[in-house]
Figure 1 (spheres, rainbow, N blue to C red):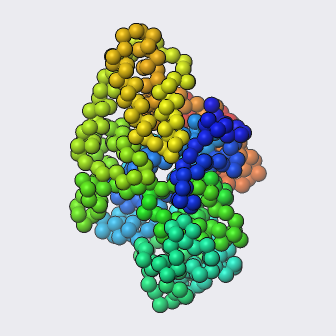
Figure 2 (figure 1 turned 60 degrees about the horizontal axis):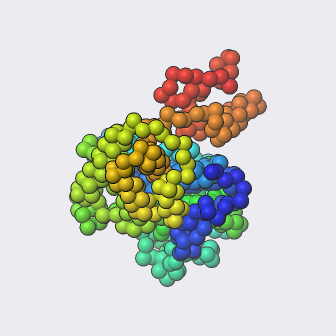
Figure 3 (figure 1 turned 120 degrees about the vertical axis):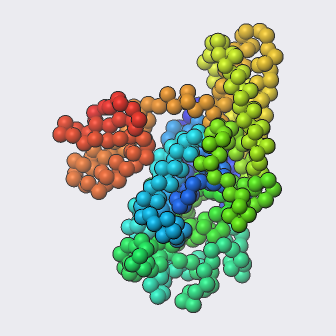
Length: 473
């Protein structure tokens, strides 16, 4: 049952909120419009297991939210301007746009293989430079940022709440990642919002000269542009708590005169490989693109969900092999019982148990345990009606966890999707008033939804990407 008003207690979702440091009941500001933003990849290489774990965890959270609420808006960004991208482009002799487009396409393909739903928005940093410049200008006007030697920096001491997410004190701020030492800083903890670009590097004109954004400001701009502020949920890997998410809070709150940025912060744990930290220096970075050549995407998804999202996940060949065998047994069981009629049950004990486990801070180990017990009972059942019920419950539980996606994809219907319908209406209105910049922005948003538009003299035609069926608006 999807909620459109009061959140009944029996459907309550509890999540560990990094901001409070405890598990809390999630309650959106508006149950008819729930917003989720997740930090996506920097696209200079294929996604590794750390990227994939975060993507799978928040895909699951997105699914849980969609079960509960009538409208959920999910944004996951692509960072397509970064020093690592510049270095890789120079090393390979590719243009930066060609490089980033290639790895964005690869990321989408790999994540689709893991059973991820497409987010409602997939913004790129380079499409939001005006938004970034606007926020930086507001921060300067409010005394939270300053210009120094072609750079613009956020002045950390100007924000009294700094450290609210990570718990770090001012004296501890230098003991963190990506803190650049520079003589022009007013305080050693100040961080870059804008930096100058040499002619050979990507750059945009700004009030402070030709340059490019710093790392942290991008997500503040994309969140505000695509979802509006404040948002309900912000997610990402544990490594982003400090400094990235701490700095996001400082920027966004300061730019809006102290108004709240985000209510709930959710972070997933690290991935290790056979007990060791995954790193280039150890040569143990596992790329999803490579894994998919030897394993089914659903087996990788199962392995990534096998540990609680907040706990470390130790990746190994044995873990993947075990998940592959588990899926093979489940598929064989479903195939062997395919002759049984599917019940229209939404209240099966297995589905409810899996749903309850996910409502309890996305407890996937408990949800999977319930599924495996149901499969065991199904194998032993002899009464046809019992077997039918158990199979229905097993299928329902698997779908809740994001498996059996081929069946799920056949149910897509644009007409029933309120978000897409709203975007189509807004784009037509923008074209009618000749606001073509807004119409183009909405077209890109629709493309992120998997909708291709064609403007004709008779009106706008649209179709689902990959489908030959088209409709007129």
